[in-house]
Image (cartoon, rainbow, N blue to C red; front, side, top):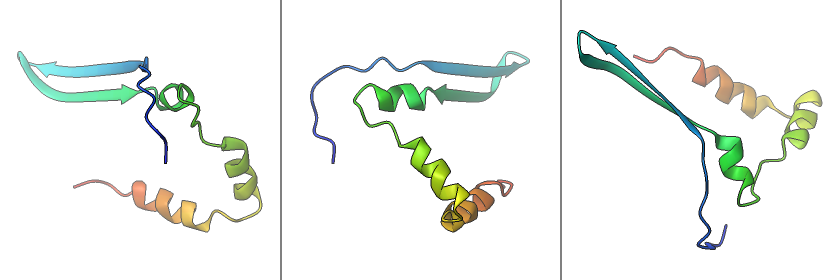
Length: 73
């Protein structure tokens, strides 16, 4: 658990508005997750994740990735 500190975060975002005929068709907001997690010091250990992937310990990750690739309806 991460204890609250009261510190403010500065999180970059990119907002994309798709407009057609004066009406919003789609809105996407992408946040800088790595920057957000790094500021309070909780950035994931990417090196360990890559090492686990190289040793074949990522079967669950592969299943999650495959499910995420399925088209949304």
